[in-house]
Length: 474
Image (cartoon, rainbow, N blue to C red; front, side):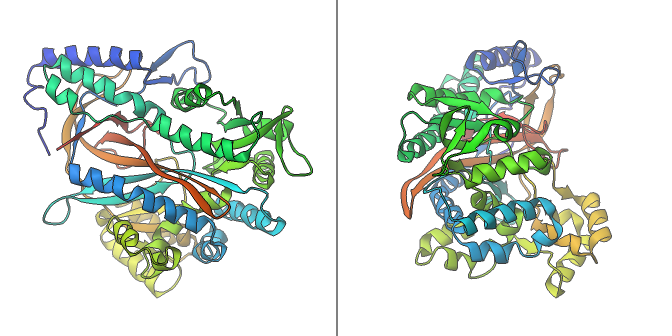
């Protein structure tokens, strides 16, 4: 896969011209972020970081990732309804990880009271890399599945047009015509709109629950605009607004500032720093309500790393998806090696193996948002420190995937233009809606390609490491 655009990138002048055109195209298309200096104002904005050229993606693996997405939607939905499985899978984690424990306590509290919510909306993103570590063709291997606040569907809807413009600038109109259409904004909005419709109140609003610092607002606005285009009213609120102004009536309908809320779409709430005591109380209020939460707390727990590791145990998928042999085979084919660090002989053995061979593994805590995983020497040091402590059960180990680096230019505001050796990660968005026990929507809703320089082991676009990209199928 190396060297796809080498001929086009021979002349420095051509690269500079293409980069200037690329940045203007990004601004024209709305591939935007607020600045670090002014994260809550849109007076001055910049382009979101992106690659100069689209990256090669093996077409067979791209099709495989799309083909398995509806299976993953079914799996996440099944996990969210299986209280016993979640209790068993997270039993060791909740003893040592306070954040997961607090989420789990709310989950149990809401179940004890009885769910008021009857419509369920899942928006997830399953992320993969292309593993070239074994002999033969590259293999699609899942990094993780994000079940809360899966981002960049909005900006990904606008990135292919930018890369099409760059390829034309470089005299490659035919290659530009081969870039695939991609509109996750529309796909995500269609799920939210379906949940809003099934909630059954035309005057009710969709509430985006947003962060205090909103640099990535334009990604969210893309989805929001799709809802306004369907005449669905959207409000944007933070946890603190919910704490101060949110209320439930006797039927547990949720109201904000006197407006009934049909759907709560979380773009916040996935890391411990999103919560203080007030925010936890706001989260409980939302969970107790009749409003459709995206995700409800059980679906957030379904996306934890510990659940990901438990799914790789023999027989687990068969229990969660009985009778779905083909779906199980498609899901299992994407699993990398995943290992429990629970206290006991199995955990002792894998911890010792990882300490001896730290470059073969990734140490993953129960966290979302990028930049949390540990590699190499850092992995070895942390495992040495916690190997005899129950604290190790708050992590899982995964085989390190070995992708094939390729050359590209990563465009960032105020950064010099230079070629980098890069690796890419493909995400497929999934959307499903369930009413009671009936699944009324189950779709793959578009894709996201993110690329980073090989020297960065971990981190996404929001974490400032990866940049937006477009797949060019080979």
